[in-house]
Length: 187
Length: 329
Image (tube, rainbow over all chains, first blue to last red; front, side, top):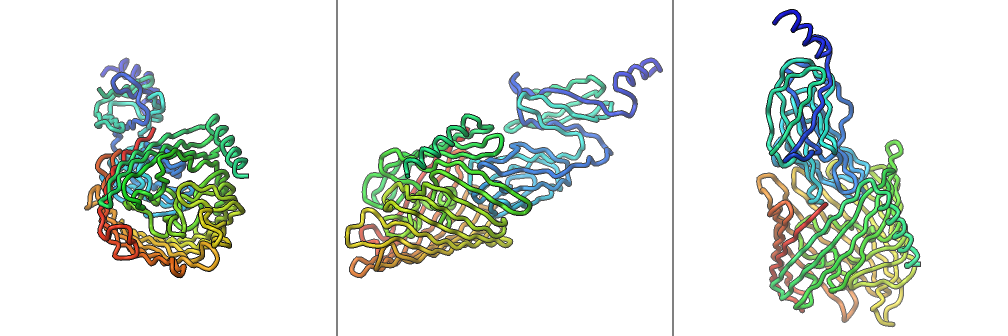
């Protein structure tokens, strides 16, 4: 790589060490997909500080419906409904059963292994949520219009992954530089 | 007063819907059959949501009917009369100041006595309501509703709930007009949840002039859950009117474990003593069964029931089966 090309790459990526924004859209069948999780492998990256992470139970639903966390994160499960809830996850990922607990009570679960946990309430079958646990600080959940922004991603070439409820995990490679765009698409 | 309360709640719900941040619509469609010569079909539709400032609202209508032998099969939480019934219709708000919880609910809601929420009747896989919650037995009724205000205050670990209103019942038991007061205290520690309830309301309107006085009941309830094992029960005592007593309860046990896949086995033992001289009823019932999650939107219930004596009009051994389709949007 010649010096001019290196300088060009540095200019495009915002410098050899600064992080850049990586924007993109999640699509399925050409339509935007909300609640898709996109993450990028950053081997050796320091753990991102993460504040209190909450999967709320309110109005007989989980909020958010899809939650993404870095491995090792503790997730609070408060009950903000006036009925009991019984949150559990048996199928895969982190397996737990929080038992019955009433309004105002909070239970906490550490998510210490990567993978997808499907979370349900065994009193209210209409309640369902997903927690995707990833081993990287670079992850994001797409908004209602399928758009997402990953911030502070180092420049370079990395492997990305994407998952959406009801879809398989997509894998690929992305060259990250300032202005790079990542569109993930399920058929 | 009843009409005014319902109208107020309806207006509040309409206002809530109009400015709602989130709205969910649900429908349950159930078909069932019992060897007690009962066939049943039911539909419940619910609309609930929250405004941006987290005012919650819920409205529910039910249409259900049975044919065949008179029985309490499939009466777990709704009236089976063949007519539309407006069930719950309320707005509520809950605050969490510091470690406390304070809330109120206004409109039409299920009587907050014991284990009373709709979801808990349906959760455990039983097709029939407990004998103490089947209105025809002059005890509590799962289709009792209040039109009024329900206040809740305390800590999550220990709080009190009080309902003040007037009867607004659906189904077979209709209480006389008048002031209803129900109070409940609930506490939990680790995996144990216990509650004490007391209710005071008018007696059943269908009772003749021989019945005087109000209905008063006190009850204890408990739930214990550990590693997918759930024990749950209620015990009530009181009087539906002067000179007679009702006491009874149930205990049920459910297993919800990964190894069992979609099957949740359940068993229940229960009794009801209605002591009214020559009209007394002393009933026992034992139920074993399962709730099976066949698909995400399809649930089956199968119950085998042994009712050794006291339920003379019914068969001693009965099998109930039901299928429920649940839709949510």
